[in-house]
Amino acid sequence: MTVKIIKNTQIEADKLFELMSTLDKETTYMLYQPEERKYDRKKLETFIQNTSEHGQILVAEEDSIYVGYVSVHVSPLAKIKHSAYLVIGVLSAYAGHGLGSEFLAQVIDWACVSGIHRLELTVVTENSAAIGLYKKFGFVEEGVKKDSLFMNGKFYDEFYMARILD
Image (cartoon, rainbow, N blue to C red; front, side):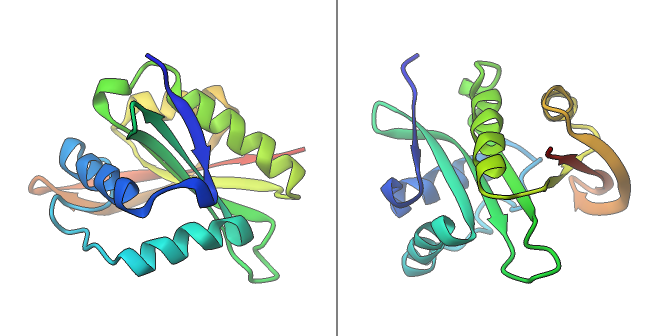
């Protein structure tokens, strides 16, 4: 497997949308239901362009196909601009091959040089693989969002997880 990581303005909106849509179909752990995500090319291109200013986005690419991504959002609001919220998605065929670890290592490096003090996320409490990955990188559970998601006819809890950077 020869995967390269590309970032921010080098990312193509069409390919990113295709990846996100595929992830929506592959896993119940992403927020959107299949076919719920609507494509607005201009909006996605603006999001990609603004990540340099308000966060970062990294995409894993193999043979011109996007196979995973991490999106990191930093609020411009003074009280919370020290925190960054992240979302990671990796196609099932590429899960378990170190992409999540590579994404987190790069995000942590970026956050440290960018003055970010706190990285945070939410994760479905049943997503043990993701929770294990986050814990490996120093994230801790801070609380539980009870019944925060409804899917497949039942409610699911999510953990709030965070890592404080030195």
